[in-house]
Length: 252
Image 1 (cartoon, rainbow, N blue to C red):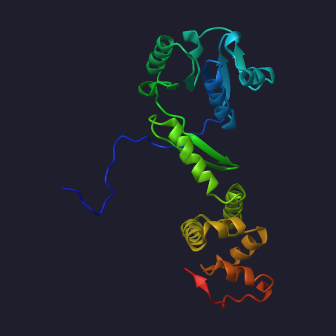
Image 2: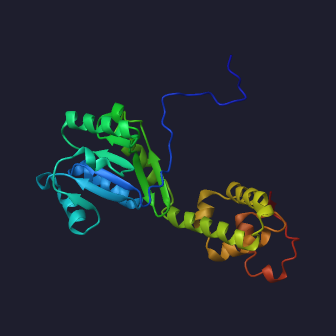
Image 3: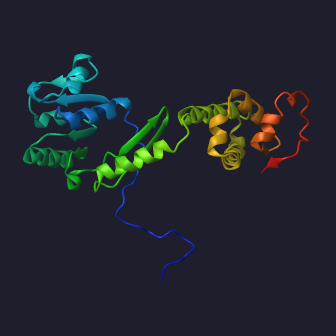
């Protein structure tokens, strides 16, 4: 019998992660349009890309990345020794038999692999991603409907404030400044709880409109463990020299 106190397990999904691949070696087999997208995804994550493909199979974007030295390139077909020292493998070739063979070799070597257009031979999927500076939002259909994922991703992007990326950077600044004024490790739980209060007190639009002056003023309320309503924070600008902790209109 299910216990309503706990979330129900819904199998069949993927574990959505932000995989940190900075400086890791990623092998891309293929040089067409799909490979171009994979290469850009990896370069955006600061991975080190090696492309294996006959030059005749390169599309203009992949050829450009090779010309600019953004990737390492070998003008030939895949060889098993290409897997030596590799952290991830992405294949995008129109040869199912060759792709399956690469996948099997990856399994033997315990290398995470994505075989384009063959979901059963993928350790992970590429979702449809919206990027705005540090903000990344991925929509995945677990390989069942990539175009649907793209539609959902566009709808989400269209309904976000235009400066969401800047807002995320601003929150990062606030957290860094907070650690600066309360650096002691014993302050950790209070810092975390206060940031949660800030996130709960303000709307997404408030957070997007907040500027450096607002964040500096907001930090004044950390010590008394309070969070002013956003308009109250704006109205108080210029009054903080006389701040004695007695202002009203607090949240939290």
